[in-house]
Amino acid sequence: MKRLRIDLTSRYQTTQAMLSSPSTSTASKQDGGLRTALSLGASGALEVVRITKQLSSSATELVFVGVPARHGGQATSIQVSFTTEVLRPAPRFDPSTGRIHLFYPDRDHPEVQGLLNSKRNRFCYFWRSIKGGHTHAWLLSSQ
Image (tube, rainbow, N blue to C red):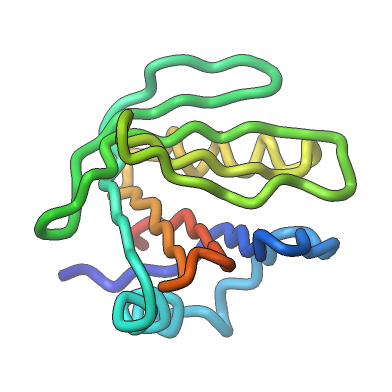
């Protein structure tokens, strides 16, 4: 498997959205992000989708389809919404549609779109704690 790096990170808790913006520092996250995501599978539900094709794009939203990248996975698409709100909603996964929904600050739109439109292998990881009280989502790209 190719080495992956986190280009954009979106981490939230359902009880309180974090105020800090998604981190874009890749030097400290090489390899660690993938290991962290995989280890979270032991403490909750982990969905991984390999992003393959863009369905739609607007000033406030991007929608991509993909394929489950984990055995038994249900995730088949992602929806990225951009907001000016300080407190962004927590990421969520709808098992009935197979869609992971992420939220980013409006200022990150060009960077997120650039990552998702690249020709690299792109992935979205979504984790929900066993009790469902916490969620995290990551966008990853191959180097």
